Each structure stands twice: as structure tokens, then as C-alpha cells.
Image (cartoon, rainbow, N blue to C red; front, top):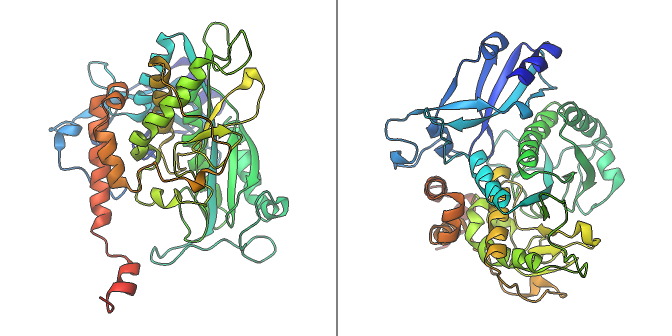
Length: 445
């Protein structure tokens, strides 16, 4: 707590937002006066916050978080304390870990799941390195969920119509917003890197510098909240839905990943004798190919997520891999031996960053430790090949439930709770009658 207390004093903080990332990757917690936070009193939350759906419902199985609806203790991680730059008064935010009253970790906490996977790498003397990319849309304020989303009006007074990928002028349309985003990120030390305009109308991408997976997951968690807050202050929404617009491509969270020797820093994806790809590199790819399809409820967690994974829509539909090939699920960018890495292009930006990083690292870990072999790299268009990923959430849930290696690594209790939550969300969606059904079926069948 000494580091936290020094921070509070230095910045004359008056309030602290004590936050916990839930299963959706959004912030739960409490706003605490500084004096009470400094007193070191235990902050408690019900464990059930981890099994609450995006619609506010809970799975019927109350044993997932404890039949008595018990509390858990939230322990501040001092390395995560940051300012909240948009707050009217000096306010800090701290990400918390969750433990039971005996000090053991809450197994269904997403932050714990990532820590658990990283511990497996540490036991092998390995250190994963990741670099996430965040795509998102800017949209006009939409108060009626029945109406389609529209791009916001920029400085020219016109809404964008799409097809302006990598356009500097298209980004300049929203310069005041991006100045605030970069200012907010700098004050929070989020270390974001490049900004580009993506393929869709008012679709943007901001990349992060590579680093430790837990630290990067924390930064992505805070970044998404930051972008939404900044957009609201410019009378628009920023959305991290995977597929917010019918005729536009979806938004991804591509994750670049490599593994280094924890002692020497050497990239173990590169053979030290030849400077070519190592057997561990091929094993990692093979693990991704074999187990990412079983982890799709994490990489594509909502009904909407699967609308993004469509042929010829700048998103992968299978688990092929290739060198500098953006049509495959797993791309190997051109790089030198020290920077050899794999880009997982399958996760949507709507996923929980802690769980997505845990899942992709778990798949690669299985491949390396089991010395698995990948397919041959693909040099042609992977969109011409068949679908290999689950086509919907229901299929994804069924495949993940049957995958024992995934359950062993991520934790059986977590997998059970996560899938129950996803099943509850799926059932809630299935009860909804859509406008498409009323339009095409009401009078025609």
C-alpha cells in the first residue's frame, strides 16, 4: 500500500475507483473516499459479479459463485494505480485481484485465469510477449436500439461513407477526439502506439507496444473505457461491438505473440543455430490451430461476434496459417529472427482481454509442450477454403465444453461458470423476435 499512498498524496486524490474486470471485461467495483481507502479496510464484492450477464441476468445454477451468494475480498494491485483524467475532481483508479477469505484466489476471476496460464510459462522458464491491436467504430449517438447505427459527422459537416482505409484526412475529421484520447492515455501511462483508419466508415485502430500479457490486458481494459468516455465528451459513441454495422466489416483484437527465454531474453520461436523457425514456433502454431476453435466463446463471446467472422469481410474463417498472409487465422509477419512472432487474427474486439490472452497463450502452450505439428503454411487466399471455426455461439459453447485440455489449463470451475453465463446470454437473445423476422416472415409464410 505504500506505493498507492504515495500516489494518492502526490496527486491530491479525493476519491478512488476500486475496479474489478468482470467476465465481459467491463469494470465492476466501488467508489471509495480517499480516507477510507487509505485506512486499508477490506473491499468486498459478491462473487456473483463474475456470472452476471450483459443483460443483468444470472445462470440458474447458483453454485457457480456460491449458493449463499458469498462475498470475496478485493485486493488492490499497486502496479495498476492510475489517474482518471476525465474526472472532475482528482480521482484514481486501481485494479483489484479477488480472493476468498482464506486468501486463495477466486477461480472464476478473469485476471486470475490469465495469471494461472502465465504461471505455466514461468514454470518452463518462458516469458510470453504480446502486442494487442484494438479496432473500434465511432458512431453517432443512438438512443433507440431499434435504429441502425450511423457514422458521426466530422469537421467537414458530413458523415463518412466508408472505403477510406489508412486515410489521414479521414482520421483528421475527428482530431479533437483523438487529441483527448491520446492525452487521456498519456496521463494513465497506457503507452498506446499508432493510430490508423481501418476499412469501415469511421472505423479506427489503435495499437499497443509489446509487453507482458497481464500488464497489456490491464491497459486494454482501461483503454476501452477511456475511448468510450472521450467519445461521449464529443457527442458520439465509441463502440467495441464486433459487428456494429450491417454492411461494414467487423472489429478485431488482433494479438501479436511471441515467447522468450525468461533468463536470456532470447526468442524461443527462433532456432539459435540456424536463425530459422524453431520446433517450438511450429508447435505453438499447431496448438492455435487445434484449440482456438474450442475456445471460440472467449474469442467470439456474443451472438453478434459471429457476424464478423464472414468470408471476404477482412476476418478469418478458418485456422490456416501463413507468412504475411492477412486472409488466414494465424499470420506470421515479416520480421527478423529476434522479432519472430505470430498474429492471432481471430479474436473480436468485444472479447475480454484477460481471457483472450489467457486462451491464445494456453493454446500455444499445449502445442509446444505436446510437440504438435502444424499444417503447411498457406500462400494463397484462405477465404476460398471452407469454414473451420464454429459458426455461432451455440456451437462454440458445445465445443468448448467437450475440450478437456482447455478445462485443465484454464480451470474446470472457470470453464463451467463461463459457459453457463454464455448459455444464459444465448437464451436471452433467442427469446427476442428480430425486425428481420417480422419483415420477412410475418405475412409471407
